[in-house]
Length: 335
Image (cartoon, rainbow, N blue to C red; front, side):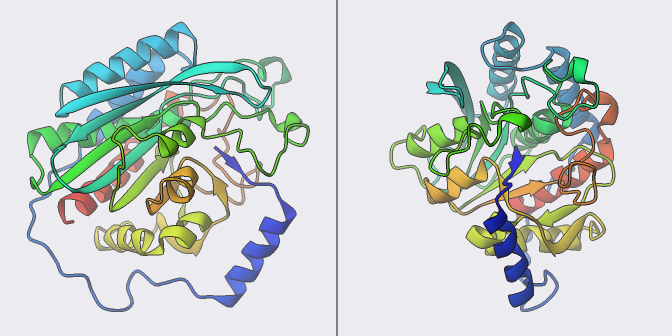
């Protein structure tokens, strides 16, 4: 994913921070507590799912590693979900090159009308354009955190949904989006900039226009991106709060209830262009992005390993995976 480097956006963010106060997860009326029994999220299992993805190598679309990992994801989710749908599509990259991708959708309780979307992207960056080593900057990365961590958490959620079935009135769709991270290199950003075209999040753009079920609607969505690093800072991402404040407040309130106050900040984060934008803007599904925002990092926004070869399994923290998974399971089972 990328930060939107637009001066106007910075001005809007500054003004918004000054003019309105964020909803406090601890303030106002408490939500009615539900008596649902929530399964225990297994961080070790989620970590193994992250490791399994990175073992295939960089998951760059139209490579053998991408194809093999895709087959594994379909089979693994197929062992837990009621059904798995593979949505193949063809689109164009920032340089106008045509490319094939596939979104993977795992469906639980397909007959339920009330639905929640849980999503992440499963592709990895085709070049390490933020790596300090110029010689390595044109090589693809493992994307252990940027992609695989969110997928790993969602597969473990799927395993829990199988072990402890959801209320039949609630349906879950786990969507693994492809071609999220194939935007232009940082030095090409201005060359290919077009305010009317989003060169990122291509899989979610396609799904938002052509969902796997005609006329598909969902109550809300949660996107997971970069949820495996140590000492995470999950601020309320700007667009999430703008399009779906009630969802982010629900999630952050639950994180506080579970004791994760130090990692789930009530601060307003910067604007992030990610898969939740097409879901909000095109599909009309209020969707938030749980994403590690590090404004004091050298890249000004994300963890230091972002879009570098250090984004590997060595920098995945089981505690962070477990925290995020715990929050997601509680939100879902208590809905």
